[in-house]
Image 1 (tube, rainbow, N blue to C red):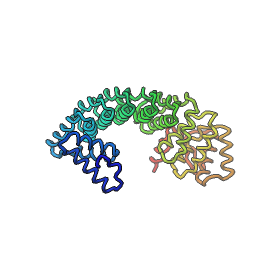
Image 2: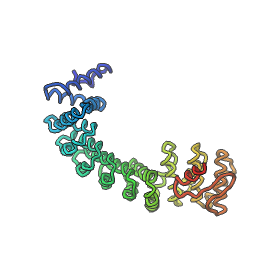
Image 3: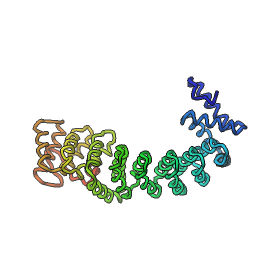
Image 4: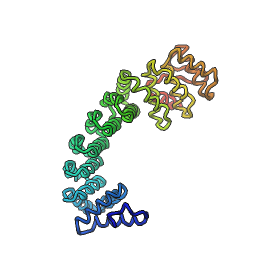
Length: 374
């Protein structure tokens, strides 16, 4: 009956069945029974299997019993039953058992794909530098689930060395692998992945394209002070050379998305830097509508960058906006400040209708200047 746990409909009975299976794994004298119980929990789903892993990961307490538990789980990595090897790899990762790194590295070449997958996930949790080269070898594993687990693990480790292994993965055949790679490269913190991320904006998958743009925005929003200027200039230069169809529409979507505030502000700033004639009207529409957003900081940023789109069209659109009394009083005040700026041709700080205009060289410049005045 316990092997058919998925067929049990009563929640209380399911919980009791899971506990019985876990007890069998931990204490039954017959390895075949323990392996079958482990497999039943695995087939039941992640919740049941994770409960087993948690129980095994919590074995120990004192330093001596901790070592004993780790030794036991390490021995399971060499067991005949793949179920033991699979649960051992997972539990060692949960325990943070760095002493087992050599054994987990060997498990990355286990004949069973499920074991290799769990070993890769465990290596990602341990974040030991010794696992990076063997994980990179699994990026060409014969099973997709293993390749994706290795890519995710390298991203979880997050060091420059680990992330560098993901750069060629942006050209992988599988969309899932490319998506993992471009998503993780946003945490690089340097200019190294900029070119491959911009190239990924032309990916056949729109999901990968969007992930690549978000990673570029992540680079800009999280870069250190030392790296920021170089990353900013490199991103702008590379995006300016890219196909506008692959850049501006994606940035417009992000700029209109109110759920990712920091990305939204960086997207607005980038739009003011790379927009050409083709999408000028759409970008002006976006920034004018942003003048009246309840998020005052973002609205002020839109005001600050609009003069970068200085053109007869922008002047006309601003005059129409003001003549038709669109938006709130604050939004019209911002629009008037922009109009005064582009018509006067001045730069720096402009005091008009009570609004300060500040040239912004990055999305944070406006916020930083005004917060220092508070």
